[in-house]
Image (tube, rainbow, N blue to C red; front, side, top):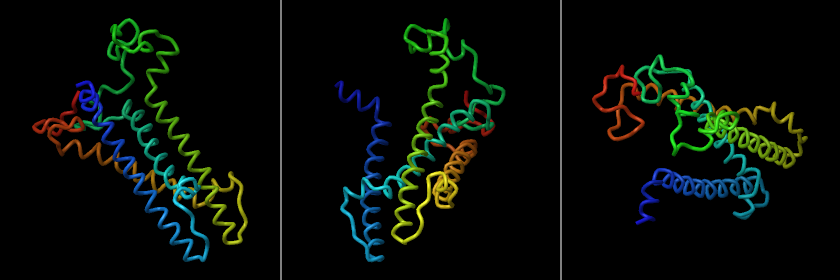
Length: 224
């Protein structure tokens, strides 16, 4: 019963974690095959699967997607504090912009006995906890962006060497079109997806989903 309760209570996270692992494994297999096909076309040595998994080529392909996802959520968490879209389930109602008062956020003396400790103690710890979601996604974005930049630099220089061309320093790579092509093609798609979700949620519905308003709710109604 406890096991079933755990699976039910965490089913959303667990299902997406499983889908992530399956998709990552599929990407690894496809990318390895593609890489070896390119190596053969250039009359170069192929690599084993596990060697490919530790290569800069695979690392940059993975992290360039991660950094854009974490950027999306970091910006979305912060933007929805101050920006609104009337009628969207992804937005606070117009007029409710801002960080909210201590009573509304259940901080300090307004916290309950079962509130998280850092919401009750006040001071710096409460300030940090009050912004911990945005801080986490910002840290994940910076870490994955840096990982993408470093692994992309290594992969770029590996290609330069294989073609008998000059390798570049890390700061120089950050000015290369290769880096910004990898970066901006992911950013633009994330920004488009967030904007589309915000506006389509005004007019379209999905019964039973917390990401949607009630099916019969007026388009102009912004859920509390």
